[in-house]
Image 1 (tube, rainbow, N blue to C red):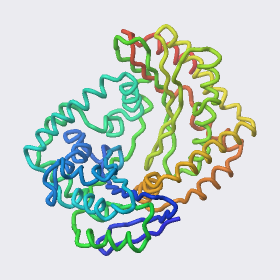
Image 2 (tube, rainbow, N blue to C red):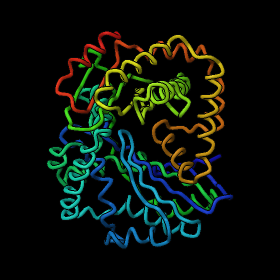
Image 3 (tube, rainbow, N blue to C red):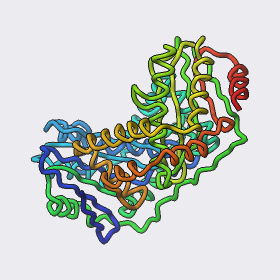
Image 4 (cartoon, rainbow, N blue to C red):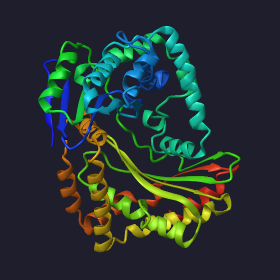
Length: 423
Protein backbone atom coordinates (compact mmCIF):
# COMPACT_ATOMS: atom_id res chain seq x y z
CA UNK A 1 0.00 0.00 0.00
CA UNK A 2 2.84 2.45 0.73
CA UNK A 3 6.59 2.90 1.01
CA UNK A 4 8.45 4.56 3.87
CA UNK A 5 11.72 6.47 3.46
CA UNK A 6 13.69 8.16 6.25
CA UNK A 7 16.26 10.77 5.25
CA UNK A 8 19.54 11.30 7.08
CA UNK A 9 18.13 14.44 8.71
CA UNK A 10 15.31 12.40 10.33
CA UNK A 11 12.51 13.45 7.96
CA UNK A 12 10.09 10.59 7.23
CA UNK A 13 8.46 10.38 3.80
CA UNK A 14 5.54 8.06 3.00
CA UNK A 15 4.45 7.45 -0.59
CA UNK A 16 1.49 5.57 -2.04
CA UNK A 17 1.19 5.19 -5.79
CA UNK A 18 -2.41 5.32 -7.07
CA UNK A 19 -2.10 5.11 -10.87
CA UNK A 20 -5.85 4.91 -11.43
CA UNK A 21 -6.26 8.52 -10.21
CA UNK A 22 -5.60 11.85 -11.93
CA UNK A 23 -4.43 13.71 -8.83
CA UNK A 24 -1.66 13.86 -6.24
CA UNK A 25 -2.11 14.91 -2.63
CA UNK A 26 0.80 16.06 -0.48
CA UNK A 27 0.46 16.44 3.29
CA UNK A 28 3.06 17.78 5.69
CA UNK A 29 2.44 16.75 9.30
CA UNK A 30 4.19 18.57 12.14
CA UNK A 31 4.08 17.57 15.82
CA UNK A 32 2.60 20.86 16.97
CA UNK A 33 -0.80 21.41 18.54
CA UNK A 34 -2.61 22.64 21.61
CA UNK A 35 -1.33 19.91 23.93
CA UNK A 36 2.24 21.11 23.36
CA UNK A 37 1.41 24.60 24.63
CA UNK A 38 1.55 26.27 28.02
CA UNK A 39 -1.30 28.60 28.95
CA UNK A 40 0.58 31.80 28.14
CA UNK A 41 1.04 30.77 24.50
CA UNK A 42 -2.24 28.89 24.06
CA UNK A 43 -3.09 28.99 20.37
CA UNK A 44 0.45 29.48 19.08
CA UNK A 45 0.35 26.30 16.94
CA UNK A 46 -2.83 27.51 15.25
CA UNK A 47 -1.32 31.00 14.90
CA UNK A 48 1.72 29.55 13.11
CA UNK A 49 -0.53 27.52 10.81
CA UNK A 50 -1.93 30.78 9.42
CA UNK A 51 1.30 32.68 8.92
CA UNK A 52 3.24 30.85 6.15
CA UNK A 53 0.39 31.55 3.73
CA UNK A 54 1.10 35.29 4.07
CA UNK A 55 4.28 34.89 2.08
CA UNK A 56 7.50 32.93 1.68
CA UNK A 57 11.04 33.68 0.57
CA UNK A 58 10.39 32.59 -3.02
CA UNK A 59 6.82 33.89 -3.19
CA UNK A 60 6.51 36.87 -0.80
CA UNK A 61 3.02 37.79 -1.99
CA UNK A 62 0.11 35.86 -0.45
CA UNK A 63 -2.04 36.10 -3.58
CA UNK A 64 0.80 34.87 -5.79
CA UNK A 65 1.50 31.99 -3.38
CA UNK A 66 -2.08 30.73 -3.28
CA UNK A 67 -2.48 31.32 -7.01
CA UNK A 68 0.24 28.79 -7.78
CA UNK A 69 -2.11 26.07 -6.53
CA UNK A 70 -5.58 27.51 -6.99
CA UNK A 71 -4.63 28.88 -10.42
CA UNK A 72 -4.19 25.34 -11.73
CA UNK A 73 -7.41 24.06 -10.17
CA UNK A 74 -5.75 22.69 -7.05
CA UNK A 75 -6.68 22.88 -3.39
CA UNK A 76 -4.46 24.08 -0.56
CA UNK A 77 -5.16 24.48 3.14
CA UNK A 78 -3.96 23.71 6.64
CA UNK A 79 -5.41 22.68 9.99
CA UNK A 80 -4.38 22.38 13.61
CA UNK A 81 -5.72 20.08 16.31
CA UNK A 82 -4.51 18.95 19.72
CA UNK A 83 -1.63 16.84 18.42
CA UNK A 84 -0.69 17.91 14.89
CA UNK A 85 -0.55 20.73 12.39
CA UNK A 86 -1.13 19.71 8.78
CA UNK A 87 -0.38 21.61 5.58
CA UNK A 88 -1.75 20.03 2.42
CA UNK A 89 -2.24 20.46 -1.30
CA UNK A 90 -4.16 18.43 -3.86
CA UNK A 91 -3.45 19.01 -7.55
CA UNK A 92 -3.72 17.26 -10.86
CA UNK A 93 -0.75 15.01 -11.56
CA UNK A 94 0.92 17.41 -14.02
CA UNK A 95 1.28 20.06 -11.30
CA UNK A 96 2.84 17.84 -8.62
CA UNK A 97 6.31 19.41 -8.75
CA UNK A 98 4.99 22.95 -8.46
CA UNK A 99 2.73 22.05 -5.55
CA UNK A 100 5.59 20.35 -3.71
CA UNK A 101 7.79 23.42 -4.19
CA UNK A 102 5.06 25.62 -2.72
CA UNK A 103 4.71 23.38 0.34
CA UNK A 104 8.48 23.23 0.84
CA UNK A 105 8.74 27.02 0.84
CA UNK A 106 5.80 27.27 3.26
CA UNK A 107 7.53 24.94 5.71
CA UNK A 108 11.17 25.98 5.24
CA UNK A 109 11.08 29.66 4.26
CA UNK A 110 8.04 31.53 5.65
CA UNK A 111 8.69 35.26 5.98
CA UNK A 112 6.85 35.70 9.30
CA UNK A 113 6.92 39.49 8.92
CA UNK A 114 5.91 41.52 11.98
CA UNK A 115 3.20 43.39 10.08
CA UNK A 116 1.72 40.14 8.81
CA UNK A 117 1.69 38.70 12.33
CA UNK A 118 -0.25 41.70 13.62
CA UNK A 119 -2.80 41.52 10.80
CA UNK A 120 -3.27 37.79 11.26
CA UNK A 121 -3.62 38.21 15.03
CA UNK A 122 -6.81 40.20 14.42
CA UNK A 123 -8.02 37.63 11.88
CA UNK A 124 -7.59 34.84 14.44
CA UNK A 125 -9.37 36.83 17.13
CA UNK A 126 -12.27 37.24 14.70
CA UNK A 127 -12.14 33.50 14.00
CA UNK A 128 -12.40 32.79 17.73
CA UNK A 129 -15.35 35.18 18.01
CA UNK A 130 -17.06 33.56 15.04
CA UNK A 131 -16.78 30.02 16.38
CA UNK A 132 -17.87 31.14 19.84
CA UNK A 133 -21.07 32.48 18.28
CA UNK A 134 -22.08 28.96 17.25
CA UNK A 135 -23.76 27.19 20.21
CA UNK A 136 -23.10 23.76 18.70
CA UNK A 137 -19.38 24.54 18.63
CA UNK A 138 -19.42 26.07 22.08
CA UNK A 139 -21.03 23.00 23.65
CA UNK A 140 -18.30 20.82 22.11
CA UNK A 141 -15.72 23.04 23.73
CA UNK A 142 -17.52 22.91 27.07
CA UNK A 143 -17.51 19.12 27.14
CA UNK A 144 -13.76 19.09 26.43
CA UNK A 145 -13.23 21.52 29.31
CA UNK A 146 -15.13 19.15 31.58
CA UNK A 147 -13.36 15.99 30.43
CA UNK A 148 -9.91 17.60 30.75
CA UNK A 149 -10.23 20.52 33.18
CA UNK A 150 -7.23 22.83 33.54
CA UNK A 151 -5.41 20.95 30.78
CA UNK A 152 -4.45 21.88 27.19
CA UNK A 153 -6.82 19.19 25.87
CA UNK A 154 -9.69 21.11 27.45
CA UNK A 155 -8.80 24.37 25.70
CA UNK A 156 -9.86 25.67 22.32
CA UNK A 157 -7.11 24.76 19.84
CA UNK A 158 -7.10 28.40 18.75
CA UNK A 159 -6.44 29.62 22.29
CA UNK A 160 -8.29 32.56 23.80
CA UNK A 161 -8.51 36.21 22.86
CA UNK A 162 -6.22 37.05 25.77
CA UNK A 163 -3.59 34.43 24.92
CA UNK A 164 -3.59 35.25 21.19
CA UNK A 165 -3.32 38.95 22.00
CA UNK A 166 -0.31 38.29 24.20
CA UNK A 167 1.71 35.97 21.91
CA UNK A 168 4.82 37.75 20.65
CA UNK A 169 6.71 37.30 17.41
CA UNK A 170 9.69 35.97 19.39
CA UNK A 171 7.48 33.30 20.98
CA UNK A 172 6.13 32.34 17.55
CA UNK A 173 9.61 32.04 16.06
CA UNK A 174 10.93 30.12 19.07
CA UNK A 175 8.04 27.63 19.02
CA UNK A 176 8.43 27.09 15.30
CA UNK A 177 12.19 26.52 15.65
CA UNK A 178 11.49 23.85 18.28
CA UNK A 179 8.63 22.01 16.56
CA UNK A 180 9.24 22.52 12.85
CA UNK A 181 12.26 20.23 12.61
CA UNK A 182 12.79 17.16 10.39
CA UNK A 183 12.58 14.59 13.18
CA UNK A 184 9.17 16.01 14.16
CA UNK A 185 7.76 16.08 10.63
CA UNK A 186 6.22 13.56 8.23
CA UNK A 187 5.55 14.13 4.54
CA UNK A 188 2.92 11.90 2.97
CA UNK A 189 2.24 11.74 -0.78
CA UNK A 190 -0.51 9.73 -2.48
CA UNK A 191 -1.67 9.67 -6.06
CA UNK A 192 -0.60 9.27 -9.65
CA UNK A 193 3.15 9.56 -9.04
CA UNK A 194 5.71 6.79 -8.61
CA UNK A 195 7.35 6.19 -5.25
CA UNK A 196 10.83 6.84 -6.64
CA UNK A 197 9.83 10.07 -8.34
CA UNK A 198 8.06 11.38 -5.23
CA UNK A 199 10.96 10.54 -2.90
CA UNK A 200 13.51 12.05 -5.27
CA UNK A 201 11.52 15.27 -5.51
CA UNK A 202 11.12 15.55 -1.73
CA UNK A 203 14.81 14.80 -1.17
CA UNK A 204 15.83 17.56 -3.56
CA UNK A 205 13.85 20.16 -1.63
CA UNK A 206 14.19 18.94 1.97
CA UNK A 207 17.49 17.03 2.38
CA UNK A 208 19.41 20.13 3.53
CA UNK A 209 16.84 20.93 6.18
CA UNK A 210 18.46 20.30 9.53
CA UNK A 211 18.16 21.24 13.18
CA UNK A 212 19.62 20.10 16.48
CA UNK A 213 16.63 21.46 18.41
CA UNK A 214 14.71 18.93 20.47
CA UNK A 215 10.92 19.31 20.01
CA UNK A 216 8.82 20.21 23.04
CA UNK A 217 7.01 17.17 24.39
CA UNK A 218 3.24 17.03 24.74
CA UNK A 219 1.44 17.30 28.07
CA UNK A 220 0.13 13.89 29.27
CA UNK A 221 -3.59 13.65 29.92
CA UNK A 222 -4.88 13.87 33.47
CA UNK A 223 -8.33 12.65 34.43
CA UNK A 224 -10.09 14.56 37.18
CA UNK A 225 -13.15 12.61 38.27
CA UNK A 226 -13.78 15.08 41.09
CA UNK A 227 -14.46 17.94 38.69
CA UNK A 228 -17.94 19.30 38.06
CA UNK A 229 -20.26 16.95 36.20
CA UNK A 230 -22.60 19.57 34.70
CA UNK A 231 -21.87 22.85 32.91
CA UNK A 232 -24.62 25.13 31.63
CA UNK A 233 -23.95 28.26 29.59
CA UNK A 234 -26.81 30.68 29.01
CA UNK A 235 -27.56 31.63 25.44
CA UNK A 236 -30.79 33.07 24.11
CA UNK A 237 -31.26 30.35 21.51
CA UNK A 238 -34.19 28.50 19.99
CA UNK A 239 -32.47 25.18 20.65
CA UNK A 240 -30.74 23.62 23.61
CA UNK A 241 -27.40 22.16 22.53
CA UNK A 242 -26.43 19.15 24.61
CA UNK A 243 -23.22 17.14 24.86
CA UNK A 244 -22.75 14.07 27.02
CA UNK A 245 -19.16 12.94 27.40
CA UNK A 246 -17.24 9.99 28.78
CA UNK A 247 -13.53 9.24 28.87
CA UNK A 248 -12.60 6.80 26.11
CA UNK A 249 -9.50 5.00 24.87
CA UNK A 250 -6.14 5.93 23.37
CA UNK A 251 -5.26 5.44 19.71
CA UNK A 252 -3.21 2.30 20.41
CA UNK A 253 -5.55 0.66 22.95
CA UNK A 254 -6.49 -2.89 21.84
CA UNK A 255 -10.19 -2.21 22.52
CA UNK A 256 -10.36 0.86 20.28
CA UNK A 257 -12.02 -1.13 17.49
CA UNK A 258 -14.72 -2.37 19.82
CA UNK A 259 -15.33 1.19 21.08
CA UNK A 260 -15.59 2.46 17.52
CA UNK A 261 -18.23 -0.15 16.72
CA UNK A 262 -20.04 0.57 19.96
CA UNK A 263 -20.31 4.23 18.94
CA UNK A 264 -21.71 3.23 15.55
CA UNK A 265 -24.32 1.07 17.22
CA UNK A 266 -25.16 3.87 19.62
CA UNK A 267 -25.29 6.94 17.43
CA UNK A 268 -23.66 6.89 14.01
CA UNK A 269 -25.97 6.58 11.08
CA UNK A 270 -29.72 6.54 10.52
CA UNK A 271 -30.14 3.03 11.89
CA UNK A 272 -28.29 3.71 15.15
CA UNK A 273 -30.08 3.35 18.45
CA UNK A 274 -30.04 7.06 19.29
CA UNK A 275 -31.28 8.12 15.86
CA UNK A 276 -34.11 5.60 15.91
CA UNK A 277 -35.13 6.39 19.49
CA UNK A 278 -34.60 10.16 19.82
CA UNK A 279 -35.40 11.30 16.30
CA UNK A 280 -37.63 8.68 14.72
CA UNK A 281 -39.66 7.39 17.68
CA UNK A 282 -39.76 10.40 20.01
CA UNK A 283 -39.27 13.19 17.45
CA UNK A 284 -37.13 15.20 19.85
CA UNK A 285 -34.15 16.12 17.67
CA UNK A 286 -33.13 16.70 14.09
CA UNK A 287 -29.43 16.14 14.75
CA UNK A 288 -28.27 13.52 17.21
CA UNK A 289 -25.06 11.55 16.93
CA UNK A 290 -22.17 10.04 18.84
CA UNK A 291 -18.46 10.15 18.02
CA UNK A 292 -15.22 8.69 19.30
CA UNK A 293 -11.97 10.60 19.67
CA UNK A 294 -8.69 8.72 20.13
CA UNK A 295 -5.51 10.58 21.10
CA UNK A 296 -2.00 9.46 22.05
CA UNK A 297 -2.82 8.56 25.65
CA UNK A 298 -6.55 9.14 26.07
CA UNK A 299 -9.82 9.57 24.24
CA UNK A 300 -13.51 10.29 24.57
CA UNK A 301 -16.99 9.14 23.64
CA UNK A 302 -19.27 12.13 23.07
CA UNK A 303 -22.97 12.36 22.20
CA UNK A 304 -24.45 15.56 20.77
CA UNK A 305 -28.03 16.59 20.16
CA UNK A 306 -29.92 19.79 19.48
CA UNK A 307 -33.47 19.97 20.87
CA UNK A 308 -36.04 22.56 21.83
CA UNK A 309 -35.32 23.74 25.39
CA UNK A 310 -38.48 22.23 26.85
CA UNK A 311 -37.38 18.80 25.57
CA UNK A 312 -33.81 18.94 26.85
CA UNK A 313 -34.37 16.90 30.00
CA UNK A 314 -36.43 14.28 28.15
CA UNK A 315 -33.73 13.92 25.51
CA UNK A 316 -30.97 13.61 28.10
CA UNK A 317 -32.95 10.97 30.01
CA UNK A 318 -33.46 8.98 26.82
CA UNK A 319 -29.77 9.19 25.93
CA UNK A 320 -28.73 8.05 29.40
CA UNK A 321 -31.14 5.13 29.12
CA UNK A 322 -29.66 4.11 25.77
CA UNK A 323 -26.17 4.29 27.25
CA UNK A 324 -27.22 2.17 30.19
CA UNK A 325 -28.75 -0.63 28.11
CA UNK A 326 -25.55 -0.92 26.07
CA UNK A 327 -24.18 -2.70 29.13
CA UNK A 328 -26.68 -5.50 28.52
CA UNK A 329 -24.81 -6.38 25.33
CA UNK A 330 -25.65 -6.20 21.62
CA UNK A 331 -26.92 -8.94 19.31
CA UNK A 332 -24.64 -10.38 16.64
CA UNK A 333 -26.69 -9.03 13.73
CA UNK A 334 -26.48 -5.46 15.07
CA UNK A 335 -22.71 -5.77 15.52
CA UNK A 336 -22.35 -7.20 12.00
CA UNK A 337 -24.29 -4.28 10.57
CA UNK A 338 -22.06 -1.80 12.43
CA UNK A 339 -18.82 -3.35 11.24
CA UNK A 340 -20.07 -3.39 7.64
CA UNK A 341 -20.84 0.32 7.92
CA UNK A 342 -17.39 1.18 9.32
CA UNK A 343 -15.48 -1.02 6.89
CA UNK A 344 -17.49 0.16 3.91
CA UNK A 345 -17.02 3.85 4.67
CA UNK A 346 -13.31 3.34 5.26
CA UNK A 347 -12.82 1.53 1.97
CA UNK A 348 -14.75 4.21 0.07
CA UNK A 349 -12.62 6.96 1.61
CA UNK A 350 -9.48 5.30 0.32
CA UNK A 351 -10.48 6.07 -3.27
CA UNK A 352 -9.45 9.70 -2.66
CA UNK A 353 -5.75 10.65 -2.77
CA UNK A 354 -6.05 13.18 0.02
CA UNK A 355 -7.70 10.69 2.37
CA UNK A 356 -4.95 8.17 1.68
CA UNK A 357 -2.25 10.78 2.29
CA UNK A 358 -3.91 11.84 5.55
CA UNK A 359 -4.36 8.22 6.64
CA UNK A 360 -0.67 7.44 6.20
CA UNK A 361 0.87 10.60 7.56
CA UNK A 362 -1.19 11.01 10.70
CA UNK A 363 -0.52 7.47 11.86
CA UNK A 364 3.20 7.79 11.18
CA UNK A 365 3.48 11.06 13.09
CA UNK A 366 1.46 10.06 16.14
CA UNK A 367 2.14 6.33 16.38
CA UNK A 368 5.42 5.88 14.55
CA UNK A 369 3.88 3.19 12.39
CA UNK A 370 1.09 2.72 9.87
CA UNK A 371 -1.72 0.21 9.82
CA UNK A 372 -3.03 -0.62 6.38
CA UNK A 373 -6.72 -0.46 5.62
CA UNK A 374 -6.74 -4.24 5.35
CA UNK A 375 -5.26 -4.46 8.87
CA UNK A 376 -8.00 -2.26 10.27
CA UNK A 377 -10.80 -4.12 8.48
CA UNK A 378 -9.39 -7.41 9.76
CA UNK A 379 -9.37 -6.07 13.34
CA UNK A 380 -12.95 -4.84 12.98
CA UNK A 381 -14.10 -8.31 11.95
CA UNK A 382 -12.38 -9.85 14.97
CA UNK A 383 -14.53 -7.85 17.43
CA UNK A 384 -17.05 -10.08 19.19
CA UNK A 385 -20.24 -9.31 21.15
CA UNK A 386 -18.26 -10.12 24.31
CA UNK A 387 -15.73 -7.42 23.38
CA UNK A 388 -18.53 -4.88 22.96
CA UNK A 389 -20.01 -5.92 26.30
CA UNK A 390 -16.66 -5.56 28.08
CA UNK A 391 -15.95 -2.16 26.58
CA UNK A 392 -19.45 -0.91 27.32
CA UNK A 393 -19.13 -1.86 30.97
CA UNK A 394 -15.63 -0.35 31.21
CA UNK A 395 -16.43 2.92 29.46
CA UNK A 396 -20.11 3.63 30.07
CA UNK A 397 -20.13 4.53 33.72
CA UNK A 398 -23.16 6.73 34.33
CA UNK A 399 -21.65 8.17 37.51
CA UNK A 400 -18.66 9.40 35.47
CA UNK A 401 -20.69 11.15 32.78
CA UNK A 402 -20.08 14.83 32.02
CA UNK A 403 -22.96 16.94 30.72
CA UNK A 404 -22.65 20.28 28.91
CA UNK A 405 -25.63 22.37 27.85
CA UNK A 406 -25.77 25.63 25.92
CA UNK A 407 -29.16 27.27 25.71
CA UNK A 408 -31.73 29.45 27.48
CA UNK A 409 -31.11 28.09 30.98
CA UNK A 410 -30.07 30.24 33.93
CA UNK A 411 -29.34 27.37 36.30
CA UNK A 412 -27.75 23.94 36.16
CA UNK A 413 -29.65 22.52 39.14
CA UNK A 414 -32.33 20.65 37.17
CA UNK A 415 -29.66 18.98 35.03
CA UNK A 416 -27.58 18.10 38.10
CA UNK A 417 -30.61 16.40 39.66
CA UNK A 418 -31.20 14.52 36.43
CA UNK A 419 -27.62 13.23 36.28
CA UNK A 420 -27.69 12.28 39.94
CA UNK A 421 -30.93 10.35 39.44
CA UNK A 422 -29.28 8.13 36.81
CA UNK A 423 -26.13 7.63 38.88
